[in-house]
Image 1 (cartoon, rainbow, N blue to C red):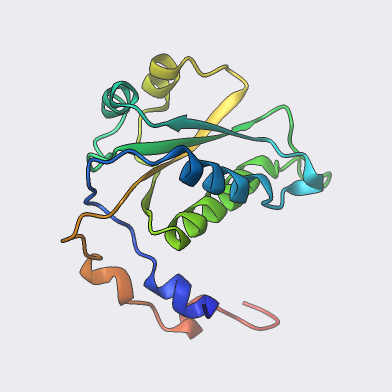
Image 2 (cartoon, rainbow, N blue to C red; image 1 turned 120 degrees about the horizontal axis):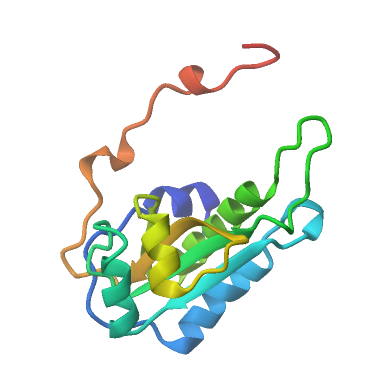
Length: 172
């Protein structure tokens, strides 16, 4: 498939069937995460797969943006395993984890699995519910599942600012 067509067709799914993802499907999504590029290949990402009714109940204690998904993946990064930019000390780990999440999101779409990237969650509750170590920083929840038959993108999905508003050449 043409990548621009593929990327344009993918949308944030907010309505799912109640079917949990099969292990083979999860494994393919995790493989896409595993091959994602990271700064100096440090691979600081840590992914928590949530694929049971019990884990979904715990997730609901951490975010209202769960959309009654049957499966989710919490993407964290290990703050102690990051490439560090020497000029200002910036960590690549948050960017690395975002790249990993994007890889998973696109792999899921290829497999017919809908996703929504969620940042609206309580990280303190997330740590408590899932026993997340202090060095792991929760970055995103990728809620996922098979889209409900009547799932549709929000009307804003295909609205974009003019490219001239977001891209400059040579200087801002």
